[in-house]
Length: 125
Image (cartoon, rainbow, N blue to C red; front, side, top):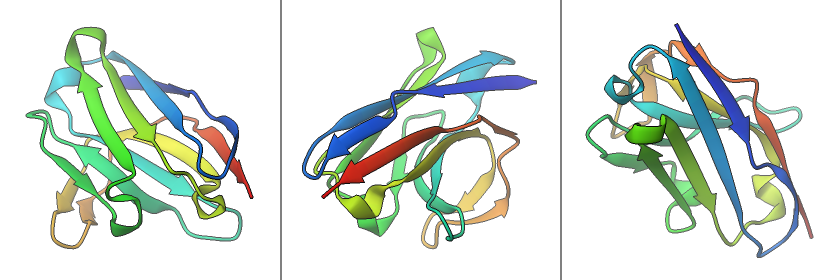
């Protein structure tokens, strides 16, 4: 089992920045690819970013150049640095461990095994 707890969400003005954190406990964190997803009201959950256990990163097109995913295996934590935020980034952000993704499509052939409760990000215009 892996337990995930997100933090760092909040209210920010457009153009601002936030850093989300996801603290993991339980089984060996470093062996899992870690992901961030988000879900806006009335919309489906969407993939945001992924970092493999080796540190390779992937981003959905809408956040490339603005968001950065990193991981600290020593402290079992994954981060999502979000810059140049826009109201379109408003959503509930979830951390998720594991899963199998086709890199060219961001389609998950196997859903992540573990999910956190999420943290709300609201960007005002």
